[in-house]
Image (cartoon, rainbow, N blue to C red; front, side, top):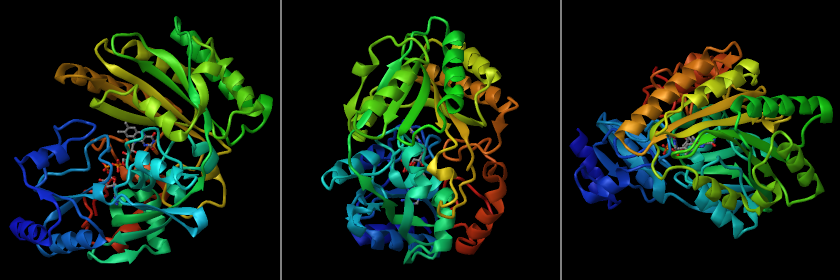
Amino acid sequence: MALAVESWIAASGMPYALPNTKDFEDWHSSYIGNDTARPLVIARPRNGDDVSGIVKSCVQNSVDIVVRGGGHDLHGRFTAANAVSIDLRDLNTVIPSDGGKTVRIGGGSTARHILEELKLHNLQIPTGGCANVGINGWSLIGGYGPLTSSYGLGVDQIVGAKIVNAQGDIIDATEEMLTGMRGGGGNFGIVVELTSKAYPFHNLHAGQVAFQTSNLTQTLTKFFDGYYSWEQQFGPLPDEFWVQPLVWQPPGQNASLIANFVWNGEPSDESALWLNRTASLGTPVADPFITVKRESLLDYLIAFLLMLPAVGLGSTQTASLSSISGQGVASIVEMAAKLPADVTGGLGIHLLRQENPSFRHDIPSSVFPNREPHVMLEIMGMGIDATSAQHGTEWAIATRDQFLALPEHLDKTYPAMTDPSVSDPKKMYGDKYDQLMSLKKQFDPTNVFKHAVPKLGL
Ligand SMILES: Cc1cc2nc3c(=O)[nH]c(=O)nc-3n(C[C@H](O)[C@H](O)[C@H](O)COP(=O)(O)OP(=O)(O)OC[C@H]3O[C@@H](n4cnc5c(N)ncnc54)[C@H](O)[C@@H]3O)c2cc1C
């Protein structure tokens, strides 16, 4: 049956590649390396009609489909064995709409490409921390990032979508479908064009404050005690302010504390005040007014990208907490001390505050479950070869388990980063689970999108 689909793809004229060809190997490679499941064929649709044709042919011939957007799923779920890979990278249009209040984004567009294009129109959108992530994949599943405190999560940016549904038809997603798509990932269809909220372009006051970390316990305790006392001292923190503590071990060095700082606006007296407050949570190793500067969101993302290995061999895991207590700090210290010397990585700590626009009452309807202040931990254990990658994987899993054993852990872990081997949609979606499953049964009753993230299993 797969041959019938391959013949249809070949006859359509769209680019495609079969295993053991150079194109296949090039297109198959990804941020997490090449050692991922190998699909039957990789097809690169040129437009929605191509996507529709592949889905119809696959459904007719009972062949599985897997979707690749930006190819940055941390567990390689952009590919699957015995499936036709629909690689959306050529659907990368960026078209401002509704007088610049929204933007129509092709299904495979990356954050970097969108920010470059939107700058020409004096616009921008919120993104994740990595410039190469696909914005559809990021928004459909959650979407944490440096502008989250100002604009809310990626899911709440979704205004509309043109999708190829489970029957292979191109349709405008209904409000009910959009509810499922805001948090339910690619389970309801293949987005060929997403309509997202857009915002006026401006530069940020952004960069990193690295802290002296000769004593990790003291450094982290001072940071978190200070941070969690701010609401009492200063009242609600401003929406423009975002800080992401990062406990990071560069290759061959010890782990230290870095604060990623973003003020969503031009440098000002107020941004300087919050930068000073952030710097006072420890002892900076350099003048924060030099390391944090006026730059665009894209400049900030590209600078951050330089910290990451070009290929992320190893494993990224996640855990979520209600907040970071003394025990949480102790766990960070304990696990940072256990980082194997040949591993690059550590903990990216996403702090979601009470004032976040995604926790207000006027948010669009969604199945994204975590609508309360919380901490999302990105636990990165990466290496440069098989041995160091294995060490990184073991460390990341042990660290995840350590946090999941804390009393303040949340069952609602971030579906994008939750390891499929421990992923339990019922726990991850909590009180949104029944709604998610009922929408899935309504719009994809035969599970055409069975390889979507997260796997729901009907
Ligand atoms: C280095 C790195 C940093 C990251 N940082 C962050 C971060 O700061 N914040 C955060 O929230 N997440 C972050 N992530 C996770 C990332 O946002 C998610 O894994 C996201 O789903 C990746 O999207 P993608 O399109 O690049 O991935 P892909 O691997 O291409 O897609 C993953 C899945 O998304 C779905 N999908 C993608 N595009 C479409 C589409 N057009 N239509 C239907 N379904 C689609 C499919 O189910 C697909 O299998 C990071 C990941 C990496 C590797």
